[in-house]
Each structure stands twice: as C-alpha cells, then as structure tokens.
Image (cartoon, rainbow, N blue to C red; front, side):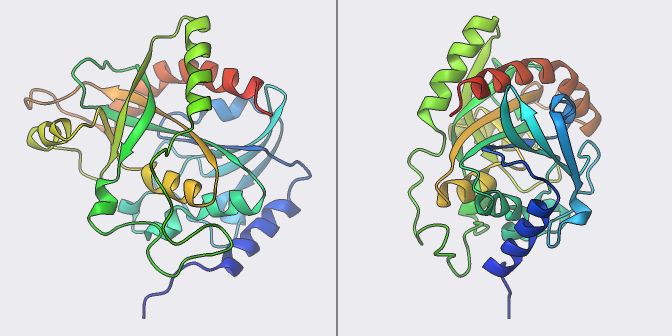
Length: 279
C-alpha cells in the first residue's frame, strides 16, 4: 500500500524549525541551481541544515547547499531554502514539495521560487532572467501531480483552481523594479519535465510548439502545493543556456552553475525590490 505524507509529519518538521529560530518569516524563497548566493546576504541569520529537520528531503545535486537560512532581507523576515530536491533524485512528489507544506504551517503566505532553466524561446540568452507568467505541468499531466493521494483538508480543497498560479500584484511590482534598475526582464511560460537527462532538439521543438519559453526540472510541483495552501507566488527562471533547437550545442550542469554567476545579481535586485514593499 502506497503511503503519503500526513499532517503529523509536517507538524513535526515545523516544530523543529520553530525551535531553532525566534524569527517569524513572512516570505519563503527557494533558490535553484547556482542561485544560492542570495542567501549569503540575509542579515542575522539562523541557519538550519536540512538534515536537522525530520522528514525533510535531502538534495544530492551540486549547487544545492541544503540548508534553511532564516533572517532579514530588505527589512523583511524571510525563510530562504538554499537548494531543493527534485523528482529525479528518487523522491515522491509529495516529498519534494514537503518544504512548502512546512512553510504553510509556519504561517508563511508569500513564496518566491527561482530555478535555473534552459531556453526554449530563441530570443533568450544565457544570463537572462525570465519572470514566470504561467506554467505547463507536463510532468503532472503524465500522472505525477503532488496532490495525488488523500487531500489534506487543513491546507486546501480537493480540486484547487490553477487559473492564476502566479500573483498579478507581484508581477506588476517586479516589472516596476526591473524598469527602475535597468534590468531587461524577460517574461514567459515555464514547463517542468522530470529529468535528469536534458532535452533533445526534438523535445525542445515540441515544447516550443505547445507554448513553453523555458524548461526545467522543478518549481511547478512547488507552485501547485503553494496555491493549494493559498500562498501568493512569484517565480523566476535564470536562463542558463540558449535554445538548442537544432542540436548544435551541448548542455551541461557546469554551464548551468556558471550562468548563475551572471543571473544572481539581477535576481537579487528583483527579489530585494519586491520585498521592500511586502506587507
């Protein structure tokens, strides 16, 4: 019989986090591959290794430090996930989205998700930042939906609406911040595949045909759980490589991490700008 995460496991993890900090974060931030540098600017941080939190999934991927950083950024208390886990690492969908449930139990109502993504849109270049305006849950359409199993009624309804996965107010604020900072902000649709293999040129042409601008191996399950629990969501993809629609280039994880060095300053400015006005 397949087992699913229950309220008791979530509450156990939330209690341990509460016991290791006196701070009360109002926003959660998930930092993807090569994007963990923003966590280093959090002031007065309480740092908690994922290994200290019961039931928390542990990442095995280079570029994911695997710790919570709770502290102040732009005068707002935040909980930063320095790294995440992925379905391809062998975890179930409800396990990789477990941290979102813990955030919800901690009373966090705002979520900023980031990822390193491959370009599908030919107009995107490595180092670009794309604000996610919508998503395609291709991995979920194939049956891997993180809400599969018994519904946790304490968090949300059985059939949550996903017509607006990303918050319009957050998006408008981000556009203002980008304009004021002189950052060229791309916008587009993010699609999630299971990985860990990168996409073939035929894969990418298909994904482009169905409306995707960037592709990765995370984020969409997290956003579904966030919206199920009533959180407001802002999402960013750091573009790590050009669209390989004709098979002329080779994509590597090292390339993804290197692109993060160009992306982090832009991403930091955008996130800081949004946090400044967050209630």
